[in-house]
Image (tube, rainbow, N blue to C red; front, side, top):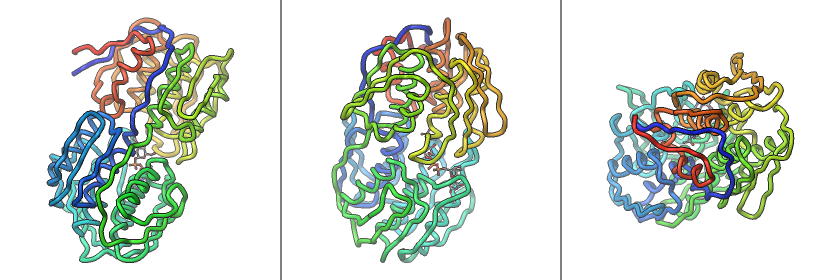
Length: 419
Ligand code: EPU
C-alpha cells in the first residue's frame, strides 16, 4: 500500500487544472445504460471510483472504451443483476439501479453497507421507485426492484437530513422512461444533479427544473446516444482553494466554475483570504490576518459536507475559536483524531467541532479513513512543521485525480512511497 509523505512548510504558488467531477461522472456513466446507442463522455477523471463504475458497466454487458479522459460506452444488450463482488467496493454503485429499472424494468443490485462517514441508507431511493410503480424486495443482501411498467407519479424525496443527491439521480433515471409525468419534490439541487439532467436531456429525455427543489420529468419511449463534457469538480476545487489558503503565496485554479464553489470562496473571504475570479479561474492568496469561522454544512448551495474535513484542517491553525456543525453526516469526523495527533486542538460535541486555533501543527504518521478526511490530512501536512506520512492512500485515489502530482506542481514537497 502506498503512503504520501509531505515535508511541510513549503509555500505553494502557481496554477493547476481542475479535473472533471467524480460525483457527476459516476451517475452519468451509469445513465449510459439507458440507451443501446453509444455515448461518449469527456473529462471523466481517472480515479478508482470511475474505474469501478466502468467495471460494473462491463459486468452488466456494456462495451467500454477509455482513451485518457474520454470514455465511450455502448450498452447494446445488458443484464440487470449486479452482485456483491462487483458493487461492494463503492457505495455509489447504487446509482445503476435507476437506469436498470428504467431500461429493463427490473434490477437486482447488492445493497451498499454503511461506511465510515455514517449509516447511509437508501430508503428514499426505494420510496421513489415504489412511487413509480415498482415492487421492492430486500433479500439476501440484495435489493430487487421490478415493475411490469413504470408510471409517472409525484414523490417527495426529502429525508430527515435534507434532500438526497444519488436518490434524486436514481429516481430521475428511472422516471425518464416511465409512462406519463413524474414530479420530484424535495429534489437535490447540486450541480452534479443538473449535469446529469443535462446529459439525459441530450439523450432525448424531457426534464425540467433541475437545480431547483421541484423537478418535472415527462417520460419518453426511448433515449439515444449522445456526447457530453463533465463539469469541473467543485470539491477538488474547494480542496485546492484550502491548500492555497493553508500554505499558499498565491495559487490559481484553472477550468473551474466559480458559481459552484461560492459557499467555499465566501467562507475563505470571510476568514481573511483574497479571492479573484475570472470566467474559468479562481485564485486564492493570503491577505493579512485571518479570522476564525462558524460553518454549518448544508445541501447545495450551502457549505458542502464534502469540504468539512478540509476546513477543519485550515481552521485548526487559524487564531481564535471556530465552530463547525455537520448537518448532513453528523458522524463525519474521522479526521479529528488524526488532526489532534498533529497538534490540533479540536473538541467534538455531537455533530459540532469546536476548533481552537494553534500556532503550529507538527508532522506525524497519520491514517486516512475516507476520501475527504484523507485530503484534510494532506492539507494539514502542507502546513505542519516536519514530515507527515498519510497511509491508506487508496482513499485519496478514489476521488482525487493525481492530488500529489498537482500539489507538487504548486511547489509542495510531496512524494508517494511504498509502505
Ligand atoms: N439519506 C437517507 N436516505 C436515503 C438517502 C440519503 O436518509 O435514502 C440521508 C443520508 O444518510 C445523508 C443525507 O440523506 O444524511 C444526504 O445523503 P445523500 O443521499 O445526498 O448522499 P449521496 O447521494 O449518497 C452524495 C455524494 C457524497 C456527498 C453527499 C452529500 C456521490 C457519489 N456522493 O452522496 O460524496 O457527501 O452526496 O452531498 O455523489 C464524497 O464525494 O466524498 C462523498 C461522500
